[in-house]
Amino acid sequence: MELPVSRHLLWMLLLFLSALLSLPCAVKSGDAEALVTLKSGIDVSNSLPWRGGAGVCNWKGVKECMNGRVTKLVLEHLNLTGVLDHNALNQLDQLRVLSFKGNSLSAQIPDLSGLFNLKSLFLNDNNFSGDFPASISSLHRLKVVDLSGNQISGQIPVSLVRLSRLYVLYLQDNRLRGTIPPLNQNGLRFFNVSNNQLSGEIPVTPTLVRFNASSFSVNLNLCGEQLHNPCGSSGFRVSTRNESSQLSGVQVIVVLFEPREVDEDNCREPGRVCGAVGLRVLVMDGLPEAEEAGGGGLEEQGSSGSGHRGREYCDGDWHWQGM
Image (cartoon, rainbow, N blue to C red):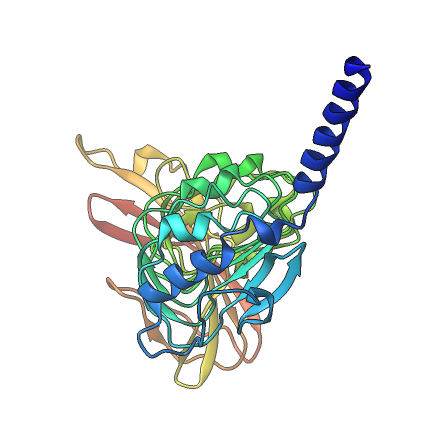
């Protein structure tokens, strides 16, 4: 009879262990302690009345919980300063939404690789600096990333192409350098990298061609189809943008074309450099004679009309011709 009793006790023990493991995560959660530690480094003005103990799901800024674990933390416009504690933040591994928008947090964005459930990250409008947080690329569930309005430098990591669920990527108003990765996520619908220090050609991917010039503007060394500013390989850079100016109350639109080959017989002396650039002038109103920088003038075209003139360059001298 001892064997059946032993089996009975074994089954009772297994049931007890199963019950322990199925208890809500709050029993084993360290979210409250993690939040208090996080607060100690960023809440000098005591905007967050957090205290250790139970009831973390009712704390200010904790918007959602699941099984006693914090899943949505929104701490926006609370005058938070200082540096985010890496260890405390990564203990909140059930977070789906994290927002520190509109504070004055500084230093480099910490490694966030422990937040593997994160779907939305809002760190915009702070004072974060340093390189782009490469750990973001490992958070494969991310859909929304907003790091705009900081002082983040370095390059945008190519590894962002691995975020297959990405829906929003806002990186504008930073100090990012280098080129734009060939992002091609089908779901990417909102994208902005304007007002940085990016350079090179914008990748012509089916995703990036959907966005207009405003998503890429104020990056002086950036060029590409999306900016209507093709990247020239040499010589004069081709510009298909109309550049307008006001001369004596009259609007003049100037468009530069590609360099044209010129008959070198016009420059017979050895060592002279010859080339030409086309100049199209569209006169929107009566145009008085206006001096071109470097000499020469544009003849009046009347109340409305257009004139095509070319100028030939030989060893520093410009010669106007009809085109």
